[in-house]
Length: 513
Image (cartoon, rainbow, N blue to C red; front, side):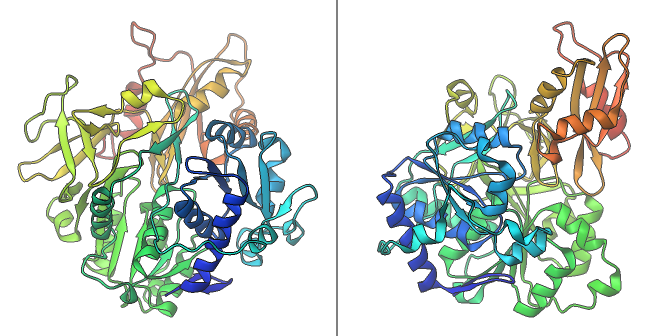
């Protein structure tokens, strides 16, 4: 079993264990103990996984940071989680600036590897340890490895969007051995590993590690004993070349990756030998029916969808054959999972009746939102977890998702919360009112749209507004479309009726969002 950074280093399982054992010792030497936080400002790299594994065997919580975030967003998360140490690639540290790191936080810097500089078009001069910081490698290698006979799944704290627009840290309670076993069995089904041996599995991590799904996939496949290839960033044709060259058997993807693969010329797609592929799992965003059907036609019935959330875990599974028989379904519940459709009062609804989805993955523990007691309480109902989606079960128990109760936008598998964008817009002098919501996007599933009501006498300049938003927010949160409106529709309570704003954009798609 090996772990390989594509275009970079390759480590045997023993060498990798030595690495993260040294990191574990170093964390303990720094005074970190169970429940403390180490934050990761890293691109896809084996270092990300070694720090997570070190955190797992010491009880420290790893906190992945979205490196697209603006510096003030990074600062907010670091303050909220109380991180004592940040491990950062040098280019990300330099671009964030010292102001993104709270006083007293120790920053350990890893020179950005050449493969990442090449993949992201970075100036090689950024691959250095800046003055005033410590070299992560020297810090790690100065310690003897901590010996551990176990490979537990890391207890990462994933930050997801909140109703205030600020992200919320999902902190889970410890698992019992029985819960850990149930969770492992569920993940084996989701990733197509049930009945397999680790030596038979060769997989690639192609999504950003700061997202929950890629990092869970990577750590689980490592614990399973699979050969693991880490890709710097997704490129459609490079993925096909990797599958052919390394005989990849399993992949975990999001629908936007499907779209980009299908945009390759047919002769390019057919020029690669993909016969080693046995299983592709996908989730994180709605998959356009034409895209999913085209993937199944191309690769055969190896495409399996699952449904879940950071808080709830994964609760359903849908094979290619099941989806072809019931287009639009996300499948039936995984054995041992909880799944219920309820009305606003929490009463269970009969089949084919749309209501609020409640669920719980097998073995998943309760959680708290760090420093958000009220929002934590609202996330549980009937012993299950509320993911914020609406849907229904058909007569055979297949789940269909119709709408989202929450106002979240999912663009390319990334969660975007409108309140955060609206808060920045409301701070602009020319903006009297605004509403941000998702509209159809053929590639990303949804893209961000803003309707803005200007103050009397103000002039609207969409490009200028987008530029100012980029100064405050990550680029993917900046609305691709800005519309200036005389008024915004409101309820008597004053709440903007976004459903009326969204409707014209979605009418021709056959979907309700």
